[in-house]
Image (cartoon, rainbow, N blue to C red; front, top):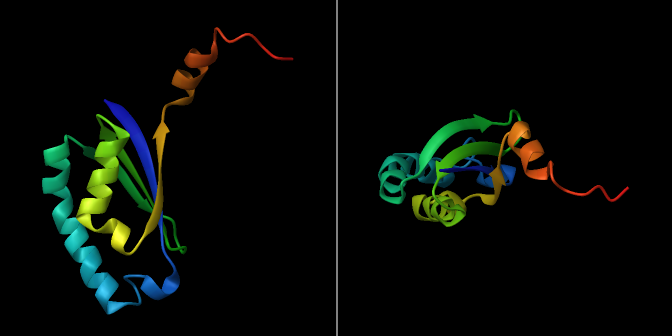
Length: 105
């Protein structure tokens, strides 16, 4: 299984803290996550809000980046958030991948 980090963000005017429609959409989004993740074989490892900004970081374990994308779209996150998805690894794993690279300098 691979790990992916999703960075989600939105403008203050569409924040669930300030906007009633966005608040209700966020409630529905979070309620939909368990079923969607189960259907796509995706596990949420961690979720953080970057206080006080309008940003969140979610870390998933999933078979593909497309599975994470589908969960984010189908749950409704992308109706009130912009976002990016990154494949992630530990620093140890990154060093291991580069150990046989010939240095350029």
